[in-house]
Image (cartoon, rainbow, N blue to C red; front, side, top):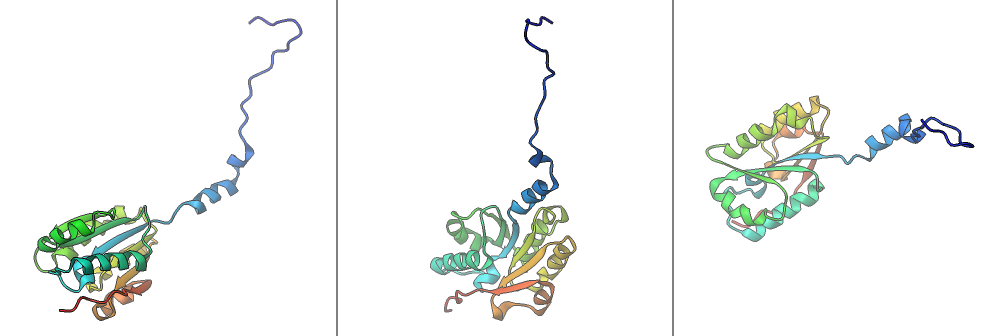
Length: 182
């Protein structure tokens, strides 16, 4: 090493701001993290008609659900419907980031949502579980979410809400858009 006259050799120091090492900054980061929700949307139930043909009513129901559930970008949304309704939904869902699953048979949409959304590994990634349905079949996933520390919210119509699901939910909100006239 060559040392120039008049210059001292000093060790190279790395300075780390103290704020990054404090406990306070770690909790601030955690508190600033946006709460994320997992939505399981049984659109057939919310429409009160698995063969709804009224596109305007479908779009109004989706808009109402988003408003009532306080959906935010970053939430994960799973929607399930029968094959016929899935075709109708394709255009109505194009501006909403969600996964649309097609199912068939009795309770097919419900069972598909449970298959896809009731996985413990998936539930553990969220802070809140929002169930868009009134069907009692979703009570078990609401209870499973609670065991993992998730808040559970149900979005339904008063006429379609099962007592079992209502009892399993931390919060219940009602849809405001009325079903289309038959």
